Image 1: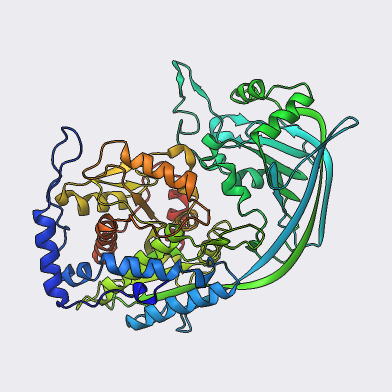
Image 2: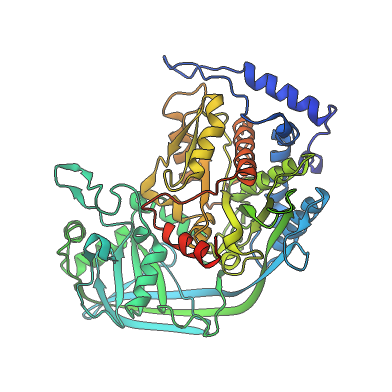
Length: 584
C-alpha cells in the first residue's frame, strides 16, 4: 500500500475557516431521497460557536487515514498479544501524545496492562447413538473450545436437549424444570424463546423476552454461563443464521485461532469444560438418528411447559490445547477538564482496537484486516480526541479516550477495564462507544442500539434535531447487538452507555438501500479477510455522525444533569447502588 495514502492531506485553511466553510456547506445542503419523500433539512451541526474548531478537526481524510493505517496488512489483523498489537498500541499512543493528551492511567502512562489466558485448541468430536458413531468435521460441522488452561480436555457424556437453555424467573420460564443436568452435554437453541403472540401467530409475544428484540438470555455468553451454573460438562448451541444474526462461517472462520479469556487463579476450571456450536444440518441429522424431529422439538421449546429431552446419544469430545498467559493492553488517554470542581468527573469514549489477526491455515488472503470492525471506530475515537484537543476552552469535566483490546475475544478488554477502572466508575457520567462508522454516505437517521434505555438518547436527539435528523432503533433487534460491543461491560457496572450505528435511511437512496448494505456486509465481509477499505466508501455520513458524538459528550461534560438509566432498564439498580455507595 502506498504510504502516502495513509496520511491526511495538509489543510491550507485555518480550523476556524474550515469550520465556517463546513457550517455553510451543511446549512445549504438539502437532498431528496428516491420517490416522493420530503427533502432533508439543513444539516448544520447544533452547537455553540466554541465548538467550531472541534467540529472542523473531524474530516473524511482524517477518518480514512486512521482506518487505513490501522487496517494495513503490516498490522496483521491487530490480534492481541502479537506484533500487530505492538504496532497498534504504538500508533495509538503516538497519536494521543501528538494531540497533547495525558496518559489516562494513575501513573500517567497511556497503557493499562491486562493479563489473559491464551488458548489454542484442536478439537475432535463425534456423536454416538448406540453402536453407531457419527463423525463430526471441524470446523465445517461444529466448533468447540475450552476456557480451562489445561493441555487436554476430554468429555464423554449424555446429551440432553434443553430448549433455549433459559432460566428466567421474571418471565416464569425455566427450561430445566429441576432436572439434574450435571455432567451432561447440553444441546440448546440460539436466541430467546420465540413465543408466539396468542392473538397473532405471525408475531412474537412482546411480553415475553421483549418479543422480537433479543435479551441477554438469548446471547451465547449467557447460555455457556447457565451451563456452568447447572454443572454441565459442556454446551452445544445449534446455529441458525436468522436467530444468531450471522452465518456459521463467522464462527468457523476464526475457530482455529487463539482464544482469550481473563486469567483467573483457578485457570478457569470453574467453567463448563466445553463450549461450542453445531450447524443446523448436523443437529437435524443427529436428531433424526435418535428418532426426533428438529422442527417439533423447536416448537415444544417455545412453550413454558417444555421439559428437557434426553437424546439417547452421547457426545465424545477431545481438545488438545496450547496454553499461555499473555499481556495485552488497553490504551487510555485523558483530556483534563477546565472546572476545578468537576475535572475529577469523566465522560468516557471507547472503541476496540483489536481484530482477529492472521490465520496461516487458510489459503489466499490470511489477514483479517478489520477495516470497518473496528479500525473505523478507533478512527472515530482518534478524531473525536483531536476535536476536543482543538478547543481553546476545554469542557468542564474530563474526557477519557479508551482504545480497548480483546473485544473480539468476548469483550474481555472492556470487562477488565470496567473491573479495574483508572478512575472510580461513580465519577463516570457516561460511556459513548463506537464500533464501526457509516461507510456509505449520509443518513437521515442515527441508529441507537438499545434506544430508550437511557437519557443519553435524549441528549443525542437534541443534538441532531436542528439538522432535521431523527433517532432510529435497532433495525435488527433480534440479533442482540446491545450485548455484543464494549459498552455492555460499562452498562453492567451501571454506567449509562450510548452505542450508535449508521442509520439506514440514506440520503438520495431508496428505502431498502440501508438494510441491503447491512446484509451485504454481514454476509460477505463481517469477520472475514475481505473486511478491508473499499474504493466506493463515502465517509460524508461518518464525518457527520462523529461530529454528533463529539457534541453529545461535550454537552454531558458541561451539563448540570447526570445521564441516567430509564426506569425498568436492567442496569438502573446497579447504577443507583454505585452512586449511593459513593454518596452521590
